[in-house]
Image (tube, rainbow, N blue to C red; front, side, top):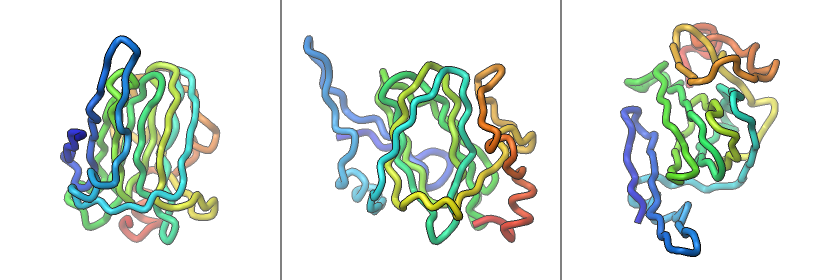
Length: 184
């Protein structure tokens, strides 16, 4: 069975599957519904996404608004990323705080992110990134928080980041709070 550990942010879990290795390579179960159920996590995964990013890329911080909000189960198949979440749940004790976890293909660790979070990652080694979503992508519901908002103080662990024009234009956390009525 996988080791599932809740982080300091309620509802966010790091998952370390049990690896079976021998001279041929390795095997592991990357997802089992019963693991999630045992931890009170009942998600209906409806979409899988994959991206490749070169070292130095920053993607995020993205979210989808209700009724298209998404929980995510993220992992790296090749390479290494610094995965970052920001709690946007207005009734949460950790509202506005961020969490960073290194997802590493050599460890095969995963991160479960519930609805109500902005999500992004920086690429520490060229990376193939996979994630399950609990809702379909809906362009009109897409939103984000500025990746380098000084209020968040996130150390992305990259210099001279490669970042999309769109990701450079998201509002700050303070602007999001004002426009959203205090969060989700």
